[in-house]
Length: 69
Image (cartoon, rainbow, N blue to C red):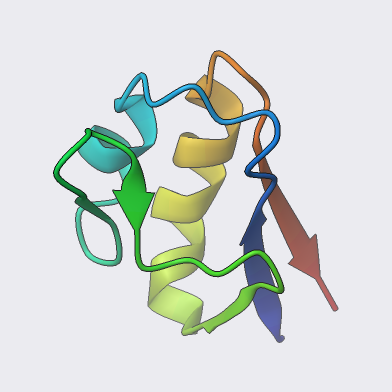
């Protein structure tokens, strides 16, 4: 299975909830916004999908999208 995680920067408000949920891939920039996922999306390893699902489900701004294929 291939999975891609993307972020909608227009929606992201820098709450940091995704950072806590997906520490394997995300870090905070100096303003508290996530780094590590480009707008175009990042291909995830299979073992990263559960944490990505949690990050998507808990994002208060609904700024993350997980595409499974």
